[in-house]
Image: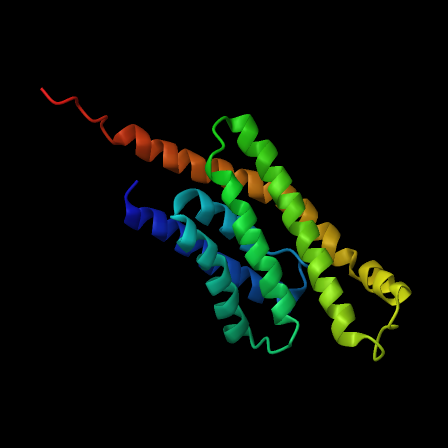
Amino acid sequence: MSTVLKYAVVALVAVASVAWRDLNLNTFLAPGVELVTVLAVVSAILLPRPVAVAVPLVTVAIGDVLLGSHSVIFLYVWGAWLAVAVGSLVMRRTRSRRSVVLLGAGVGAASSTLFFLVTNFGTWMLGRGEWVADSVAGLMSTYAMGLPFYLYPLLANLVLVPAAALGAHALREREAALVPAPQPAR
């Protein structure tokens, strides 16, 4: 697979991520389900590390601009996505299909959990004393109210992340098989 094809695959997933976010915000089809984690994993497997970390963040930024997200919560959201993008780099070295699936499920679950914890903490921090109590009970209430937005993405990421990781690794292996092995000098 050429470098152009790798970037094209990642760009397609990025566009799908923004399009899905727009559709889901307008239809509430699957509350909280996103494709940025899938994008982070595919980028981590196919692209150089710095680019792989930047792609999900740039995609979220573009989505925020296009969809009109202007809340201060973006600091927590982007912080969570940065951690997800960096964490997805562990998917680069997995070799067997079983390890890709297991690690993909782990990355998907960890990403959903981290995003849930960070963004709901941010919601509590921004709303303390206004719409939620400025106490541990208020924080727990915020997490309880956010549970529906945790369960759907968790289930989705347990399926989508391993599937995307398998596909990205298959593309990378196909490229390796097409490149002839270097011949020793004679």
